[in-house]
Length: 423
Ligand code: IMP
Ligand code: MG
Figure (cartoon, rainbow, N blue to C red):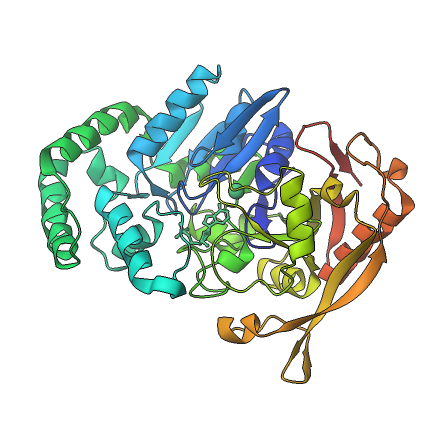
């Protein structure tokens, strides 16, 4: 398999968790390189549903080593709860199956509180964040005042650093009219979590280099999607990390010339959770998908906004990520649609645009130009071979891959491992 980067080609929730789970069959190591517990990766193994937030989906394959890389922001209590939740479902997470980077940054309650406060202040300009403190934690990292895992698990250093950061942030919170964070109870909670997590912490950069030198196959598991990227997304309606393929390098310490392939995951239609432009948004397909019980967020339970497939967007994603291969998921979501629309360009002030404009306000005013494809109007969730898919379905999938500009290699028609076809 070599070293593979997997990214979301749309606005997140492309079904990456499932594709990662399928690909980890061939991976020795799975690495998360950015984001935090804002992510929600849903994976079904048999009848059991697992929702992972921080731990790479590889944890569900015995023998796979999972890495939380340096680019991640880690909420200790969230991680401990996730480890305990997996244990209740029979998945033991041990220092042999999960390692945590010393240089990942730590999320604190003031980050979550500030996340919420800033959203309230933005009013109808709000981003619609997951309120997990992701933006403020990356903000502290960039401002060089963040605490890293190495500080957090250092029992002699941590209390003083914690008190310093708490004091400054409580001043800010008071100025905003918010409740200050309590010192003693939060320190006690973080100390308890540090004791739990200390055995998992290591120098993951060195560990990954040694493993790749020995020939290990590494899968870099992207979280969120291309248009939530802090540089390449619909800023400011984005998350605070590099969700595109470059983030896999900076977030792990594995250099670009050690990467072999980039796989882009996209839905057969488009969804977005949170605010910001979504040119192909459409009430008909939203109602259809929500009516099927689909497209509710895995982290916050929010209803996802839905639209038709946007080939302008995915073409842009193929460009900035260097996508070699495509995995298309949720194909069965379109099973009942008579005529399927695909956006092939945008109209903006009388002009045709074939790329995604950088300015979110311009993008918000773009009108999609659609091409219509005949639907297949047959259930596909029971189909297991590419050749057995309805001809209209194959035509649709090959067309959207071609419009995106990469080779179609995986098709998913449902959440189960076996509802996956390889071309
Ligand atoms: P944040 O990452 O919580 O700051 O949220 C910023 C934006 O990214 C919001 O629109 C969120 O809904 C969106 N977002 C963050 N994580 C995910 C994800 O895993 N899937 C989909 N959207 C996400
Ligand atoms: Mg998700």
